[in-house]
Amino acid sequence: MSGALFPLGQVVMTPGAMAALAASDDDPLAFLFRHVSGDWGELDDNDVRENELSVQHGRRVLSVYTLKNGTKIWCITEADRSSTCMLLPSEY
Image (cartoon, rainbow, N blue to C red; front, side):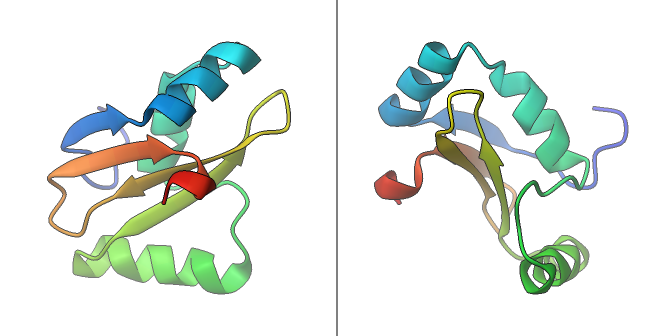
C-alpha cells in the first residue's frame, strides 16, 4: 500500500465490528487506509505522540474512529506487525 507507515499484517475483524460497519454502511478499507497512513482518528495529543513513537520503534499502534451512525471502532496493529484488528471498544 503506497504511503503506508507500517505493515498491517493479517487484517481481521471482530463480529461486533463487522456488524457495526454493515449497519453504518461505512467502508472498512477507508479506516484501514487512514490507520496505516498515520491518520489516527480521534486520539488525544498524548496518544498521537505515542503512536508516532510506536511506528518508529515497533510498538502497538491504535486508531479510533467514529462510524456514520456514531459507533466507535478501533484499529489496532500489533507490535510485531503480524496483524491488525478492527474491533469495538467493548470487545477489547
